[in-house]
Amino acid sequence: MRMRRFGWASVLAGALLVPTVGVGATPAVAPRTVAIIGDTPYGSAKLAEFPQLVAKINQDAAVSQVTHLGDIKNGSSVCSDAYFGTVRALFDTFQDPLVYTPGDNEWTDCHRTNNGAYFPLERLAKVRQVFFPVPGQTLGITKEAVATQAAAGFPAFVENTRWTEAGAVFVALNVPGSNNDLVPWTNVTPAQAAQQQGEFDGRERANTAWLSSAFVAATNANAPGIVIAIQADMWDDTAALSGYDAFVHNIAALSVRFRKPVLLLEGDSHVFRVDHPFTVGDPLYSLHPLNGLSAPNVTRIVVEGSTNPTEYLRLKVDPSSPAVFSWTRVPL
Image (cartoon, rainbow, N blue to C red; front, side, top):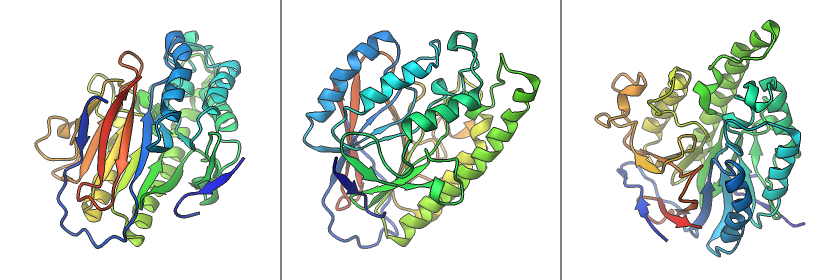
């Protein structure tokens, strides 16, 4: 099994259009293409279909890496070891390196009765065991080395990773739905329930540090852009959102200083959309208290998931382009 190493260790198309003020000279680097998926396999039908999606991505000669934005099951199915093993086996059929960040359905929400009434922290530990057995190494047939926060002072956070594609910095963080794990757990003991706030606080510290380090690394490397990969739709106005306020503010503040293109990739709400919620005047801007802080260089994409159409997002990173990022939706 060969190991490769990252930089440091057709339907609808779009492009990220941002101001280029402050963009420095970038060495000539060949473009790279990443397949982005999320909220899949979601239910029995999508589970049965998933091998076809893997095959479609494997056959895409442009793709050199795959990123999964979390939610490997639906919200009303059991969070069993057997199911995790099934999905891990499917992940192992990707030819290209696979980076995965956990979603709420595989740990945060597993306290629900119809999920098996698990203790969420026990399920998070199992997710880490099954999907991150070697910290700093991707899944997939072709392994890649990635930076991991487990080697940066937060040993538990094997799922928080960082790598480069065509010079752009990619950072994956464990930011799940269910209000960032602040929706109260049920079917747990009082002692277990008391651990929920501590889980949130510890993960918030880790995510704050890891996000900041990604921007520092990008600035030091004169990276042409940054991609932030998480599961939660932090602007889903049908759900509680307070658990994301600080994280959203941090993205805005760091992006204002960075000035170059920043792409935020999310899943969770399942319907494809592109918007600019960090820009004053965007309809979603007011959902978090940014107090006038505006970062028009940030574009958000929510990937399609859960239901039809089944697709992946072909994300191209081209440092020779002022936009840096462009994308195409590829149907199954």
